[in-house]
Every structure is written in C-alpha cells, then in structure tokens.
Amino acid sequence: RGVAPVDWQHGCPEGPFGIVYVDDKTFGQCPNWTSLCLAKMRLQAKGFVVQTTARQALTLPWATLHEWGVIACELGVESYNDAILHRCRKPASCAFIDEATRRISQAGVLVCPNILVGLDGENDATYARTQLWLERCPNLGWINLYHVVDYRYGGDETVQGHVLRTTA
Image 1 (tube, rainbow, N blue to C red):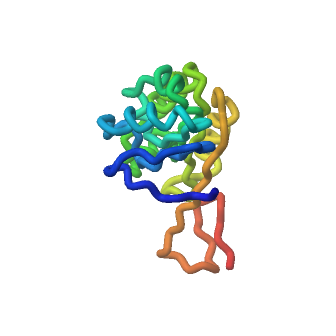
Image 2 (cartoon, rainbow, N blue to C red):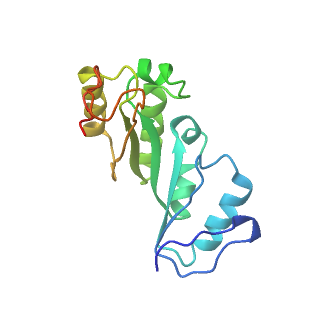
Image 3 (cartoon, rainbow, N blue to C red):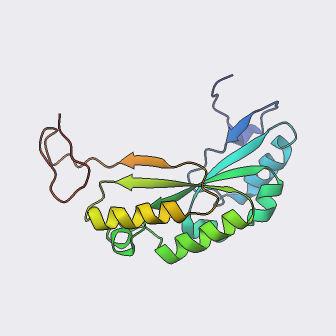
C-alpha cells in the first residue's frame, strides 16, 4: 500500500500492516506513547523497525520489545572509531556500540547499523576498523550507508584524506 504518514498524537492507526517503520529518530526517548502504539498495532502488524542511538539502546528492554514485534533496530553507529565519534561530538563509543549490539542481538532483534562515510578524520585505517566491526556484527540485518558531503570542496575536486572521493 505504500507509505502513509501517521499523526501519533491522535491515536494509532488501524491495520492490517506489513512491516511498520516507527519513525522516531531516537526510539525510546518518548516511551509514554511508543509502548501503547506498539502493543495495539502488534495485533495486525508483521513487525516493527525502530531507530535509536547506541547510548539510548542501552536503556531499552529489548526482550520485551521483541515480544511486542520489534524485528529490527537501525542503530546509529556512524563510525566504529572512538576518535572519530568524539571529534563529531557523537554520544557514543565503541564500548557503547558493542554493548548495545550485544543486547539487541541477544533479544533476537536484527542489528541494522547506520554508517556515515566521509566524516572528518576518516581514512583507510578507520574505514577498515568499521568494516571489520560490520563483518563481526552479530545478527546483522542490513546496513544503511550514508555519504557525508563536505561542500567546502567543489564537486570535481578530490577530497584528500577520504577513501571515497567525489569526481563529477
């Protein structure tokens, strides 16, 4: 049926549904409605995909969420490198990412990392570290790969220090 926006403030929509993507940028920050909507919609949905940060993931009851029908979590990994995460002021670390991944996986929920390519400071070694983490990621579902574009450089110039280079 395609994608239709839902106004959550005026109640949960009625099903039946396929896989429902809960479009809450950091799932779990507003638990006063998410649990009620998930519980009600679960009756007619095949499952739910949620998105959250590694730090927020550590606060969520993954076994319960899986029972309610959460089948996948798009996890904000960005880069599996503490120095890069710190430089970008991300509220995560490799330790947080590892623990969040372990908890999500143990509950039977797919881990679907969001990876950013082109972050300041990335190089062959940092990309290799992220790739190795992806290869070892338990219960990997899919990878959302985003390319950060630095508009200080022209579209036909090579951005030094980055593995992916733009050439128009």
